[in-house]
Image (cartoon, rainbow, N blue to C red; front, side, top):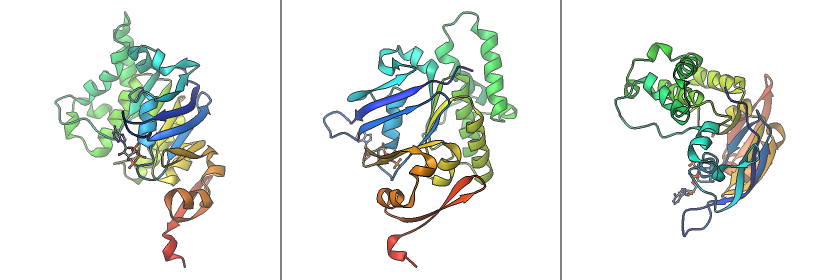
Length: 260
Ligand SMILES: Nc1ncnc2c1ncn2[C@@H]1O[C@H](COP(=O)(O)OP(=O)(O)OP(=O)(O)O)[C@@H](O)[C@H]1O
């Protein structure tokens, strides 16, 4: 497993060519091993920001730095050794097995000599960690949504990144698997940035939160200080009550017009 990276994002802006920016003015820093939840209403720019972190969206201005290195100055293969992404869109129906999917995570390392045996061990460990070893020979397309999600996370782990970027990692997971996925993410010695619509899970997973509001940062800071009712009201247009529960936070919501 690679060492977790320091992630520094400075004054980042991105938008599709010829259109106004979708995200702008985003700055934050995460220490190695820090876990950030990016939250915000639909269309706030969360996925667009994430794409800037795994080298798909080239920022219009500003920088993304991994341990001080500009992400866009790195060769794509070197960037892929340092950042792995788990995305919402699962790949289409193709004939790969679960093991082949996870092995694909080794692609950025394929050029290294003598990688064969070590790669096999990394793949086996990633599958064991995500509890999918028994599915190794199954076709990916035949898996349940949760099994697919666990396979995609295993593929990212096989990549041995220092930064793991996840877009809605608990989608498709039932309650128990959600809680287990959060525990697993917390147990990884990686820097993590994840979008999470469910603020309960965001607060469980992350130590910091970035709230995006129409593409701009509305707040960034420790989860408990950031995910407060006032901010939730402004960013999501709902009334919220926040309570502490077993070391985490739990959120209850209502529409403003439904006030008791
Ligand atoms: N390549 C693109 N071309 C045009 N518009 C885009 C492009 N990428 C994103 N957008 C627009 O930018 C806005 C933000 O999209 P984005 O997917 O980043 O939001 P999000 O916060 O992840 O939303 P959701 O919570 O609904 O997944 C949306 O209005 C979207 O249509």
